Length: 605
Image (cartoon, rainbow, N blue to C red; front, side, top):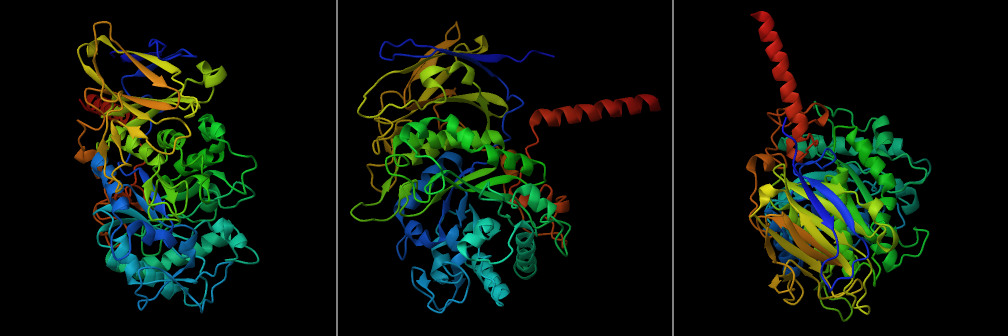
């Protein structure tokens, strides 16, 4: 067997303008290592929109150009719209009334539901679905429905709402339904009283999804495996963990189906939550990327529990700081680096998708969609983290990410502030991402950082590599972010404006010694791309992308997708499920069968 060539990357200081404090040496394999992610869905990096704020993001009688231009930018990078979740606390407040024709929700003055905010206090009408239908054609959507409402007419209320989605949002690719938002918090929210735990939730969830399947999905020949049960939103004394819900039978077969009701697990997380987290968050702490991994420890266990089932794990509500961000932290350039890192990190864990939650008044939303006080709509730096991630993974449906551990070399000042990822396309190394989140505020104006020598195999002699930088004036800057010679702020409507940042676009021909030299300033990220500029040269692999396609929603009459083995929901192509079987595992499997077949044929001779 031929030995696998390796890319050797040595981070070192060369440029006089950069005062490196640390030298790092590492290597990157030509092919994905065993710990690399599965192929990444082009819609992986998505958004969650709080239902009460939908009109702020979509517009009312006039579409919101800022929102749709910003989404279209991402479509142009991946050939697929980001996955949108329309859900949050207020999905459990909503009821539908066809006579409510305003471009807003209205308060129900005759509410009868339980809750600190009654579970029927928000009335929406046909305009709500008209607004949602404005997202780009084929936008994958997870739609949140009301589980909190428990009056005798709940079956009529929930099936009416679901029917409205299917009938009035033909532009959307509705891939899943989420029934209930964070049910483990229902006692706190007043939606339930008395005994309430994961077992009772499972029973009520199965009751509701059963009604939805029989009355809404099955008549439309849609599989039963169309729902995302909500997992624990807390780590304290919970019975809503994935392993608990499975123990309570939430993944049992649906009636009149040979599949379960589940298409994916649905979990929520905030890096920090005001009033819940037990320490004071500072910008320097936020920038220390190792704290992301510390905070995510419990959820990483949940990812592992999901991987022990047939179903993927999605972070349908993710946030930097809840409930509405923190000015001076989530609206800074540091948040752009944080976002890029988190998306790459989540992919390496086997998370199938991330939706960063947005409200119109949150300093942690990627953009402010409407005028608030005296501030006109604008783009926040963290949106650039999305743009960088999407341009790096591209539209191929074959992108895989592997983290490169440099923690043992990052002692002293840089400890926890630098993360490195290798990105593979079609099973070959294609990009290297170096994120240097060392604090470097605008007032410091420091040019210190890391110098980088990338040593490539001699087989790449004469090949071109290209650089793209994610940069800002400083960690605490709230404007003037750039990514890959693009900025999205000055146009006022989210359309990109070309700009020369003096760094991105530089190209190097690999010399006979196989090296190139680059710099990464503190509070900056760089992408090294083989052959093409970042954002160019990649094309969709139709066969690979078919795995993520909803495909035909028609069933075989038993609740399964026609033409697919979907016992207990396994391999449900309609939901875009990818169980993460890696290429090398498939090759080993095929070779084993070939050997066994050869032995069998030899014995027959």
